[in-house]
Image (cartoon, rainbow, N blue to C red; front, side, top):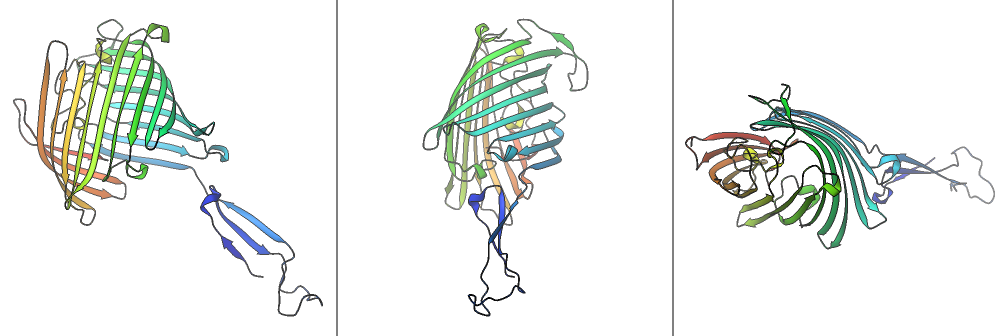
Length: 363
């Protein structure tokens, strides 16, 4: 008996289909069937499904976050559909986050639905913030590479203070107009444009992205805190002779809010060479950063970079602006990009060179 195996990308979760004639080699040859010719009596199709779910477990280290561990379960084809479910937990020395995310990318053949339930704890310079809640977001592609989305967030936040806040040390709970805490209900609207392929979003080499969001928290939305927040960002990556130029920036602003909801400087992910909370430790109303990097061609998955970063954090009365320059080494390893940066701060009393190690792209 002969058999033929065929595959097709359109089969989705079907890895292959085995097509074979049911006639055995020792079946008798009739007068209607010449000797030496095998005619199949029927067609047998045996679909073979490919496993679509993934389980990930990892550990690592970064200069800002310290030691970290991550576990994730992801099923992109829940119950054989195109719906996805993700369960993820991340633990570092500064934060703990647990997330359950459901996604429907083809809702009514026109919309992208995402629903999150989360529990997040993060340690800042002067306090610890714990929040549990959920967010639902509905998006639609309105033009090539351009998406519009609207979402609603409802969470309960607790803020604690202590001499040295940490994830596992108890703090004194505070809920007031200065410290923060309580229910937060907010609507968020936004647009995002991107020509960067999803497969390259972790560390893009070509393409452009920019977008903006507007978030409104109001008592009529179930919030104890009222504010108006706006965020904007851009990124551009292109060849420059034999090199690759990376440009990125962001700006965020928020009205007067308790300290826990203010904008806070987040270390080397904002400006390399500075620790989290290095400036304006009580937060601010406006945060901006600009990052420029020139990368050499990759040899054996290794490349060199030179960079300049700048940023600032401001309130209505005061503010600080900082900057840094440096060089780095990027290794595009099998587990993702690994970065080794040496940054020289251009502001502050201590301008000694800082070594920064991290996993993943920075743009």
